[in-house]
Length: 166
Image (cartoon, rainbow, N blue to C red; front, side):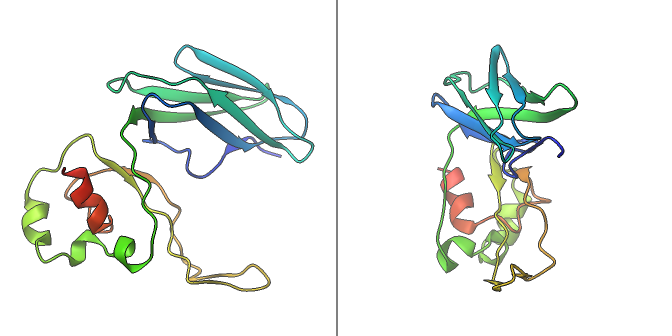
């Protein structure tokens, strides 16, 4: 089984500043995993089903840019451009799914230069999961972290955008 991290752990990830946090993923069963972020190194064992979880002490430097390196002795995975800052978890239905491109001020907003230190992560909008596990729609894009700019802001939650501007 290949070494990997849970989907949310990808390039340009933002984690809460000054809070204990966890990095998790999968690997072969019952092997040692080493996870490194800055000066912190954690060694954990994967479970019988290959899951692992490493807990880290808070990082209080909101200006630093880090990498996450995960190694199982056979292969490595590196996540680039990890940052720490203020994180808002937004959940809901239509109120949170309403995209900034549908805001009546979108054309004006897009022309402005958004804050350079705003990042967002859109979770796919799954409409239905059948009993056999089939997901609708089937053409879902893999979620990624994005640094906010005029070229990628259309699908960001409008509420998330306005909150980031406060």
